[in-house]
Amino acid sequence: MTEQGHVKVTPFGLFHDDSIVFNKYYLNSTQGLFSPEQCAELQSRSMKSNSNVYLNETYQIAMTLLSCATLVPATTCYDYSLPSVKPEVVDFYLNNISQYYGKFFTNLLKLMLNNDLLDRPSPTLIATILAPYEMEILSLQKFSPNLEVLKQQLESKGAASFKSSPTN
Image 1 (cartoon, rainbow, N blue to C red):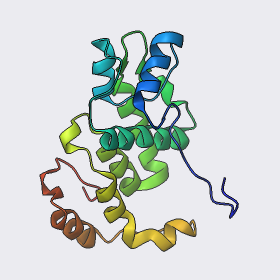
Image 2: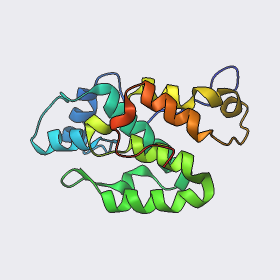
Image 3: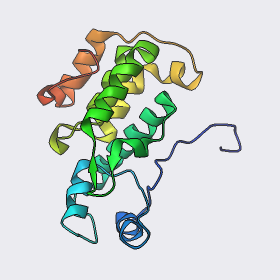
């Protein structure tokens, strides 16, 4: 929590250098929040992640938000013996939160948790999606996304290639 009273959300296991998380996993079996790409790298016994750090963080932050929304540790979404993400568990949680948090939030998380790295939104795109609702988000007010505005923003940022969007 900042001095101004704002809560900052950081994914469990997120460090400046992902190799620290990898080393902790190997040495201590520390359970971090890994993207599917990082799980594949760990399976191949890589000691350092070579995948896109920003898109890995997008996935990790989405797992943290999913954990907050479900009040269930995000570590339940992983099989650490392999390691791998359990997509059926992630899908189960995503399907259950929709009734409480609405389609916009659920679909944004689905985008962020996309297993295909190339279809996962960048932090810049996420900021673009959320920008029109900044005041409502910061003041903790409910908001109704304007679906046409969102579609236009996604298309203008080259996100038309996404298989899904917060508006679907």
